[in-house]
Length: 120
Length: 110
Image 1 (cartoon, rainbow over the protein chains, first blue to last red):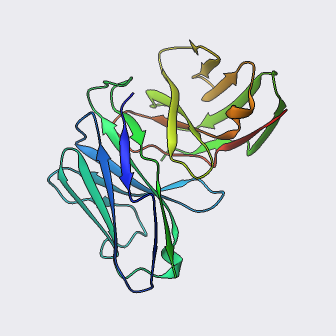
Image 2: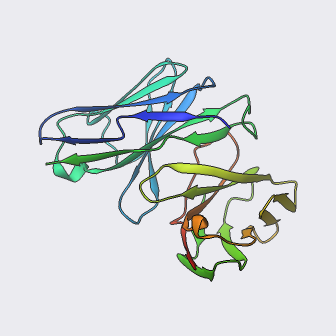
């Protein structure tokens, strides 16, 4: 099936710093990627939809100036958590939609392994 | 919008079958996915079913879809300890973001 990678897999940073997380589709081109956030023992919460070459669409309640998303190519989307604070500590997961369905059904979303962020 | 409900916990003995149930609200869902999440990991696509199907079998996995009742189930035959994880169902129209319920935590007892 299609593979999505994330980097880094975990990061610890000081409060006030910015952290960039990369999401790559390795063997397919993804015009659309998604960013989710997951708190311990909870479901995934969609943060934003990232479209290649255009501005991301943020879900209600997600600060776009806080969580900057860039989708500069068909295989890479980045999420930057700006001026991170302890309450931003979470597990961030990206997914990429495979429009061609090379790994299964068309429009299937494939998920990255996640990035665990800890802000001290 | 879509609302997805799953039972939170399921415990089975190794070798038995597991059945994880899911109900959803959006009747226009065309693809219905099952994902597996192991501790500290992302989501792994397990299987999917199209809305025009009633059943799909894929090795130990059987997906049943009752479109009238908006009910989806995942049966895992001969459940193994490696199947212990959280399972999410995710119905979608295909070009919309996936909506997840809280997931079902499957515990397999050796």
